[in-house]
Length: 154
Image (cartoon, rainbow, N blue to C red):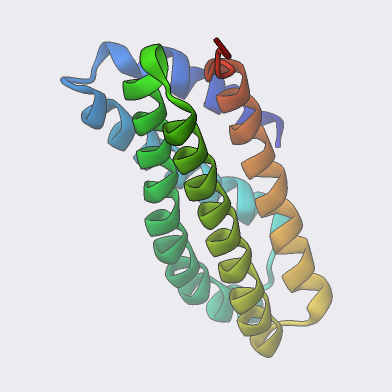
């Protein structure tokens, strides 16, 4: 987990140098994070061969679905940044509603895939995976919380 925290700091601090645009920066960061996240999961889960054989295809399916949901979150953050200087109450309300939709979609995805993982692995292993997911996502959320300013109320 410590490797992931260090990596996240490096991603968000250093990748911008190489990026041609904001979207390039985001995609580079997401690609690096995906690779490092998979390595962290593999390290923390310590699967035997049989578990690995059934886990990784479902993990890949899960991360593809998660990627689409995280793309929506990036859109919300970009929308906030674009409107930050002149954020109306209506826009703030819209952004918050979109954020709640994002949270619900992510929760629904986790519920759906927890059931799928429990069908192929013991519940303890499935729960451990989602515990690892939660830790990694908490690190990402912490970085975002530091970088995204609070709404200024006028």
